[in-house]
Length: 145
Image (cartoon, rainbow, N blue to C red; front, side, top):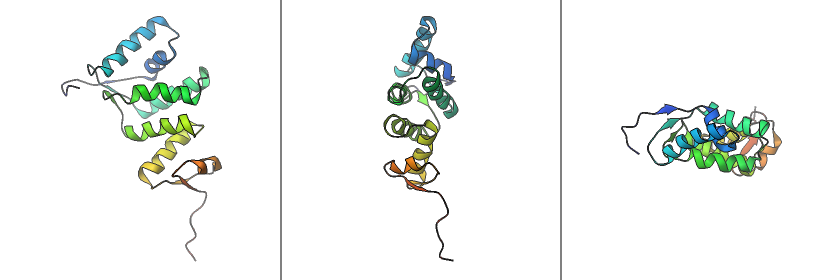
C-alpha cells in the first residue's frame, strides 16, 4: 500500500450493498471500491459506528446470520487499506459475534474487556460469562469493609 494514497471515509451503505448484492448497479460500484482497497490502490477510513450500522442492517433488515455477517465483514475489514481506530478490537468483536456472542454491541464490550481490561467486564447479561477469557461482574468487588 502506497503511503501517498489519500484516504476516503466509507459509509455503511457501500459495505451493505457489496455484501447483499441486491442492486446490480450499486453492487458493481461497491465491488470496485472494495476490490481497489484489497489491491492496495485505495485507502478508506471506517468509523466503528458505521461498522455497527452495517451489522445492524445485515441482521435486522436482511436477516443474515451472525456467522454470515462475521465472515463477510472480516474479509472486508482485515484488508490493509481498510482503516479503523482500534481495528484489532473490532476484528475480535466480529469473530466473537460470529462464534459465541449474539449481539454485536455485546461482542464489542467483550472485545474491549479482553483488549484492555484483562477480560474484566461489568454486565448484567449472564450469557457473557460464557465468553472465553471474560470475567463478568454485576457489582463492585467486596473491599472487606
